[in-house]
Amino acid sequence: MKLRQWRLDEGPLVAFTAAAIAGGGVAVSRPLAWMLGLPPSAPGRNAALAVFLLVGGGLLFSLLHLGRPGRMTLAVRKTGRNALSNEVVFASITAVAALVIAASPLRESWIRPLWGLLSLAACGLLISLSWVYSIPAQLVWKGLPAFAPLPPAILFGLTMHAAVANVRPDAAVRWILLLIAIDAVLWIVRSLRVEIVRRLGTVVYAEIMTARGRVAGARFALLTLLFPVAVLSGAWFTALAVLGLGILVDRFAFYGLAVRQTSESEVARVETIIRYGVRI
Image 1: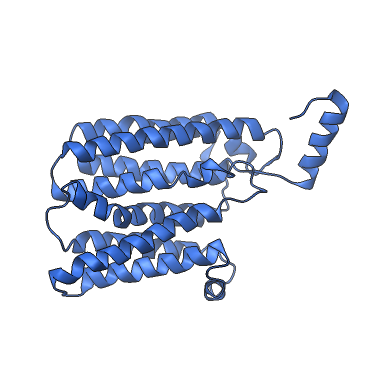
Image 2: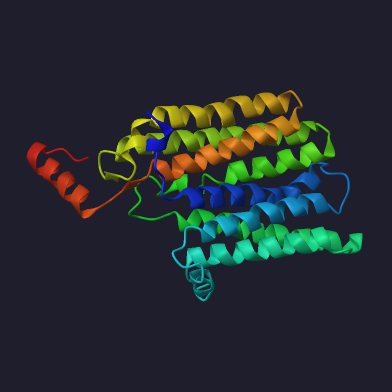
């Protein structure tokens, strides 16, 4: 199977969601990092700059997916009623708040409240990111798999804060290992759902679905095997790079292994029930 055959129309969305998960995770995990003794200093302007570059860059990538970039301003008008609108608004607030922390010479007494605001906005971003893809017609994305971005987001944030602080607190490592286990369970649920529903709907990308074993293997190797090894070895920046690549593969799998419920697939399912008397 040649890689050039793996056509994926949602390439910009892969980049956007991967960047939003990583950047949102850095912001959301900041209060948790403080409670775990990470990082020792308050301002965290470099971390805020990372949030701005990731989330802001992700928004730019998302514009590539729009036929007319001006539609993004129209989406804002439906804030509160539409998950996509909420996603755009929370991403914008997150990017702006991160830029303020990174660029403004504020007193340290202002930093923690601003980080609190930034963390809340990033939390809204990650939740709305999950709600956007809880679509009934997308058979793989329904239910629990829609919330799969949350563990990798917090993992990326805690790993970045630990890398910058250059320490290895046992409490942070325990949290990371717990989140890895939760993420592995969610990935198993997603993989099983793909196997169940790929015969019930219309596979969006047949070439990628055929190679689902390799995609799943790459994702498992990066997030479930190599990443914890790097963490336990104290190689935080290596762990961060492995995790970032794993999140990209995860988002590729999310879109590439999609299965839609169409009128044709529903007719085929009903015909199978009538012909064989078996519900599938």
